[in-house]
Length: 109
Image (tube, rainbow, N blue to C red; front, side, top):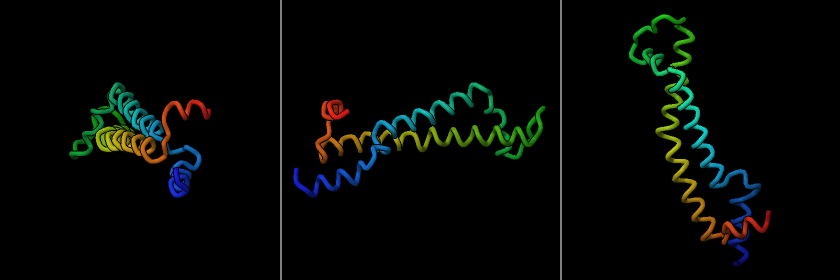
C-alpha cells in the first residue's frame, strides 16, 4: 500500500468512532426506540398533526408523546435505511481502499 492510501486511511479512521458497525448500531437503536414508542401506544397521540385535540390526557403531554412517536417513526423510515446503506458502502470501501478485513482487525485487537 502506498503512502497516500495510508494517510487517507488514517484520516478516515482516526479513533474508529465512525465505523460500519457503529452506523448499524445507530440504525438498530432508532428501530428500538420506535418499537418501544409503538408498544407504549403513543401512536394515538399523533392526532395533533391533523388538528384533532387529544382525548382524555393533558394536551401538553399528549402532544409531547405524539411528537416523540412521529420523530422516532421518521428516524426509522428515513434515517435508518440511509445509515445501513452507508455502513455497507463504508465497509466495502474500507476493505478495498485500506485493505482492512475482519481477520486483520481481529489480530490487531
